[in-house]
Image 1 (tube, one colour):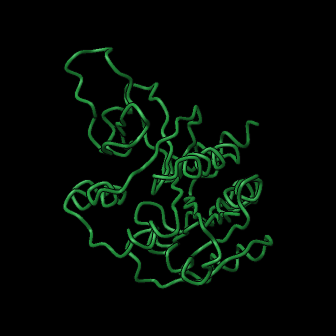
Image 2: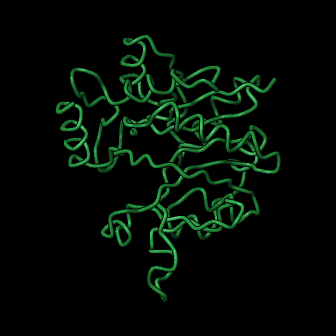
Length: 243
């Protein structure tokens, strides 16, 4: 039987919002909201936070979570989780859940896991949502995705894709940065050199696509608030406090 682990990479030194995993809302750090959602997944067998900072490790252990230290030299989250996976080869599927997605739900996590395990030819799965706010189409921080008729990703971009030559022909989809990998695919991808498209768009999933790997896309209605800026943090804080 396949075993699945959720690994949550968490960095202290974010450029736009330093120490964001430890920012508190209702006296609970952001990383705890993410961890607790992950623990409610019906399809995951374990949850591990991966960090290079002792302050994050201490915070996770304080609320009863499992955390492992990793190298500070990793360039992206996939490299960080690959180090943890190298110590836990008993897992067949690895879900990479960002530590700054406190509104993620266990149902959405399981949707991503199912998308991978139900397609024997897929290397990776990820999630998208239909864009309802026109302003997000031109926002470079909102990554767009186009996919084929079988829900296999064709491309991801910070630009509006597809180009709106014929208005109302096709909806736009925003990428939600949650990935589920087959173990061999994760190891293979993290050993590849960064590609020109990955560097140009600053999107690591393009490394997989450019090397011919198959990314399965599942569509969700969830529109989580990812915490990238102080404005995002205040928005999430407001949502929690008003509920």
